[in-house]
Image (cartoon, rainbow, N blue to C red; front, top):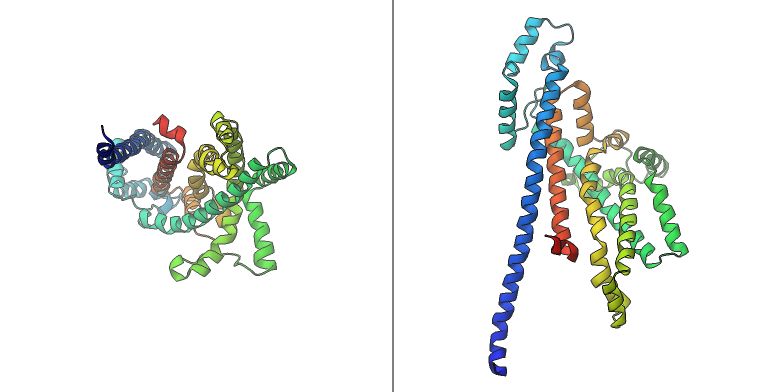
Length: 343
């Protein structure tokens, strides 16, 4: 092939390589989606089925909530028939699953309200706090983990390690109480309780969610910092980094192009469960800061025996876990070369 022919064929070759890379990336995405669905479907069916079975075994009933413990057998039977609880268990379960697939989570036993709307109100509060907590945790944890890895075996590394160890054992509700006492009551910089939707102003919205987000973020900071330090230190010991040093690449380029991409794997894997956990574990923090969030709604529903509400919380929780893990897995496939080879 002559030089002219090679130059003419170069654009076609580049297009072919680009098309092949696109197909490969699409294949990775489809493979991740298939694995996620394969895990989600059986877990969802098993979890919801077990919840229904436990309800039947517990004897919980809307009649007990509406009529009280002194209700007659006839009154209980009448209320349960109105709710369709006199039908066979599998029929009830099938009807409920069909409604869930259409976005209908049922009706609350305690107040007759639509559960989807109730969860939507509380979930907006919890997602706001959890998102800010995750952002704060990732940013601060990333900075601490990077500094510790770049200054490994020095006093800076030991100081960072000691700091993240201390904050990892501090309960969120204790941190929340201290934050309220210092920054809300003492200094008056933030409101001590309540929530303002973002639609009413970003300033008031951020002011109301900052303290609870900080209280929840400490555990994320500790986990991100530890996992990132471990991943980066391990990446620095790999042969390809040694080869890059021998070739004379700058430390900055080695870190950004080689070490960081391969060291992010443990951090992303950790974050896969952090965000749903922040949403679900925020019930104590919501009590401290007077927030009517998802965690508090779940706790209140469980306290009164509102089974449809608890089942709705279960569905949303599974959806959150699956969705966020899907995002993390896609990020892993995009960022880390090891994940790309494993798909």
